[in-house]
Length: 336
Ligand SMILES: Cc1cc2nc3c(=O)[nH]c(=O)nc-3n(C[C@H](O)[C@H](O)[C@H](O)COP(=O)(O)O)c2cc1C
Image 1 (cartoon, protein in one colour):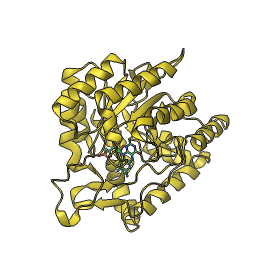
Image 2: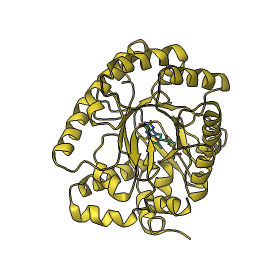
Image 3: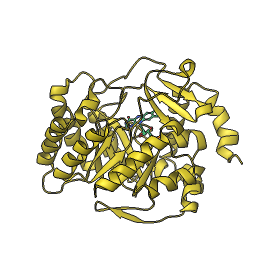
């Protein structure tokens, strides 16, 4: 049976083009974040809590908001009110950028999928740090862990990538419960090359040197398209550098399940990504002790359960939320 979001809200949002629907949602939640009555109304969706401690943080439940939905960190109180156990904002880049030309988000309802080629459109580290400072000073900072996902600015060459990440890291670390290094988005040319052992090692060293006396947990977000050998090398580098967690996975460039007439360039998310992503969670959990945060195709209690069975400690939602709405959180928690 369809839930009320699927019956009443989704048809409305899906009558708009995907990016307009996205902006409208973010705007409404951003507004709601500053009104207690609105936050109170959003709390109706809250799932039961089930505390989890991981890399020194306490999560009220294991369901997080995946990066990309609130890139600019404008609606933190609203996400917390909806019941997310943690919120990951970003990807934030050192420089503000517009991203790729529109249209750049595509719905594939039959496949329960999205394809996006946004290209890290975001306000940039300076503006986002200022926004987060304002939120903190307003006393509305959420009680759940807030992760900040950082990536490379498009104009920065791969050789200078480390400096770019370092800039965002320095600007944002004080606001973050953990920092995610996004080295796996398919929409910034060359970004995925940072998954190569030497480049990743350089990046992790540089960030590690910056960490200071109160280091923040560092999480690495990886692509579902890495080969077996690449995964082995990547995990070795993460372990050597004391990485706190791995997010598996970002969107995929494997569009083999999509009919050519529906296909678009960009990263594919949602149901077609599910199995591939879960397989990677299983592989990582079998080969390494690094905690895994699963992201990819979580649409219901069953797909969430499979991620935990594969070894995930936490999960994150994006495309499932677009299709199933905030009731998805309770549906998952009730089944755990
Ligand atoms: C429109 C869109 C934008 C995204 N933007 C980002 C991003 O900026 N940074 C990032 O790390 N992941 C981004 N992602 C990837 C999601 O965080 C998630 O890892 C991926 O979509 C798989 O989960 P899902 O199948 O539940 O959507 C984006 C995904 C979508 C659909």
